[in-house]
Length: 402
Image (cartoon, rainbow, N blue to C red; front, side):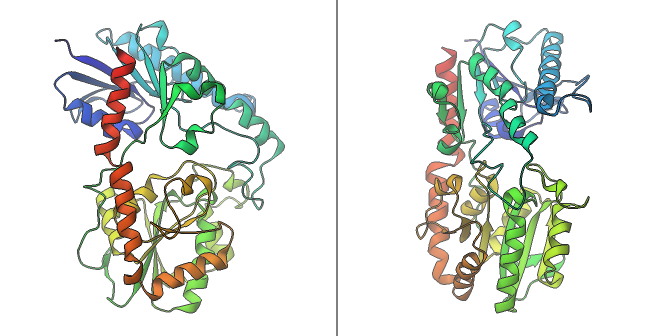
């Protein structure tokens, strides 16, 4: 029996396709190939092929069309790389929508395409204008509509697609709903689980009597409420002198328009300059490898997760899998997974006093709130673990390929 060849396409390797690609590569009946901008050779049983961009949007390109211009250049780069790899004969192509990953491949291959549909942009009542203190410009509202151009091409071209959460799927136009299923990328609950070990942050040993509050985000930015977290931390610090705030995340802004409001410094620096919290109460770890982050999360008495209405972060599911007691913003993508009083505590994103009061309640009695963390892990294991999601993805891929 011939092996089924699946071609994954994403600018980065392994990105969201890592769990499913590695899982499928272990099957005897599947040949996994991954096209990206940087990976080559074989990795975890996956053949990796790089593609090279030869252009992109420039300063004179209209601001509203730069996303599409970049996606077209990327689509053409993917097309060239596939054409040059003359032995490629995919039975199925899986790509991340919006990047231009798969848009031109129907000209090369007569096989179905499955797209991961992560986000559909809305110019109003959305992530863009959720925070009035960081208002978008008129041109940003106009650009939001244009940013969907490549996504709409993908919706037309694909045989099927999937979104990680129901909230994300519901962002897409109703006329395309039948093409999109809800399947999460999956959480490795063997990696992300509560760990016993010494109370250490870097080279520093933490006193057993110290309470630890954790916060994690890929970038410390306004979309993930880093400034709100710092204000909450100041309220907590004013009430208790035994709390340490441990922050994992980089200084880059991945979303939003933070840098237009910071005077040229990172959003983290801007917040620390304006809020002036006691630096002795914080430990900034930068970007942390998964194994170390799981260990750090396991030390915490409380994990704070804040987000505007945007893609639900992997980090909060990872924290839940580590049995963290989570205090999160009561925003729509959060409510799909976290339920107040059942597996987490929720409070209004803008209510610093309310968030701080809930945090202090947990810190007064961490053991009494541990049941929330145990329930949070059950939520992830039962609904979002790779043991649940990867077979569902394989079922989708198999159905589409018949």
